[in-house]
Structure formats: structure tokens, C-alpha cells
Amino acid sequence: MPELPEVETTRRGLTPFVVGRAVSRVIVRERRLRWPVPRTLAQSMAQTTVKSLTRRGKYLLWECVGASPGRTGFLLSHLGMSGTLQTVSARTPLLKHDHLDIVFSDANIIRFNDPRRFGAMLWINGTETKHPLLDALGPEPLTDAFDGKHLYSASRGRTVSVKEFIMNGHIVVGVGNIYASEALFRAGINPQTAAGRISHLRYQRLADAIKATLAAAIDAGGSSLKDYFRADGTSGYFQNETRVYDREGQACVVCGSSIKSLRQGQRSTFFCPRCQH
DNA sequence: CGAGAGTCCTGAAGGC
DNA sequence: TGCCTTCAGGACTCTC
Image (tube, rainbow, N blue to C red; front, side, top):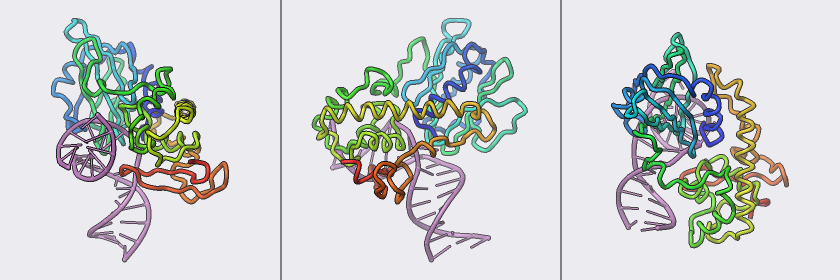
């Protein structure tokens, strides 16, 4: 489920239940995630108050402040491929793959479920969000730091395909498999083109397309926010939004040509061979 | 350094 | 019905 829009939707949905609230305890049922959940995490986060919930790429940063300075730190969470964070109550039955609960003093519980266990729950001690996983990340796509000039200068000499290039979190964060295909369609760029052979002008179009695609998806996620905390949670709003993703053989919405698919870096790509060069 | 493949894991879907 | 293979919205890590 999670690409950047879904992570941002999760952040917005969780914020009223989390920010300014006191954590009474953390229950870890399964440590074997993408990396082992630190044994100290539960103790570090318990008896703190969440001061802010921010996003960096697809990571969520939970700023936790304790009564004494030594207890300050950040929960660093990632949803991986199949993770969800939802509010539940103490009466909510445990489901398979419910790996971790954050129990608040107001009795709300944030529950992490992740069948594939590619997600992460880590802890950063101290008052700064310094972590190896965050160090080399590229700019946020929805900020002014990300533009066509950035893509152009970062891509010179690179032979990797432009689709794999924009999915590289060291180039720009948060562009996942669905929105990579969607943004390239919007920009009219063939996903197989070598990153280093694309002009500055076309990268300006691509940067704009990435921003527009992600912003539209966040808006759509926002509109489904009211559904977010339902028990079944995951209704995919983006199926209605995609123009090429998972539409192999269907007619292109612009020119009517048949949408094609191919494999790039063991991931599926979808594109219109007539609109994208 | 970059490119490409391998890796973690469960579950759903499709072929036979 | 069951068994097998393939694929899934991520991204780090290793090898060359």
C-alpha cells in the first residue's frame, strides 16, 4: 500500500491521536521486521509525550520527549510494502501480523500491522534526527529544493533508466513504483530512456509531473481520510487515479493506444508507447 | 563511484 | 481440491 501519498495520509490521520499525547507503554510482539526492533525501544518511548509527527520520504519521525532530558528521542517508522498504522482500542481483537502497539494514556492505541515485515520500527536517541537511513536521502519532491535542475545535474553520466533513476531515494525521496510510471506518463517520457540523456527542459517537465502526481494522490488520500480508521482501512483510492499503472492492454486515456508493460529492475513498468518518447 | 542482482517475508492469484 | 510458480505499493546490501 504505501507510497509517499499513503505515508503522508497516514501521518495526517494519526496526528490528532498522537501529537501532544502521552505514551504509557509500547508492546512489541514481533521483533523481526526489516531490522530487529531494538530491545530498548519500548522502554525508551514509554512515559514520553509525542511532540511532533513528521515525514521524511516514506519514514515517519515521532518526536518523543520525556520528563528528563535523557529520555528524549525519535521513533523512526517505515511501513515497507505492506505495513499499516491504525488507531484501535483495547477491545479491538488482535489480528495476524499485529506486531507492535503504542498505548497512549487516553486509552487510544496505535497498532502496527505488517504481513511481509519489510517495515521498520527504530529508535533514535537524543534531540536530533540523525540516522544512517536518513543521511543520504534526496530532497523532498514537494519542496522547492526539488526541481528539473536538480534532476538534470544529478543525472549527468548516468546510464540507468530514468524510471529507476527517479525511484532512487538518494536522488529524490518518495517516488514509488506506481507514481514513477504515472509521472513519466504525465511528462511524456519513455521510462527506458537513459537518465543521462534527458534534457534540462524535459527534466523540468518531469519534476513538475512528479509534484502534480504526488499532490493529486495526497489530495485523493485526504478525501478518503474519513475512511482511514475503519477496521478494514485500506481502500485504494488511486485505482481511479492511475492512467497507466496496471492498465496493460487498455486504451491510453490520451491517444487510445494500447498501454504496454515491461520489467525494470525486477519491478513492473507501464507506459504508452505513443505518448512517451 | 555506478549498475545490476539478491535479499528479507507473507499472501493472493493463476496455471495445471 | 491441492501443488507449484509468479507477483505485489520498498529499499538496503552485496558483487563486479
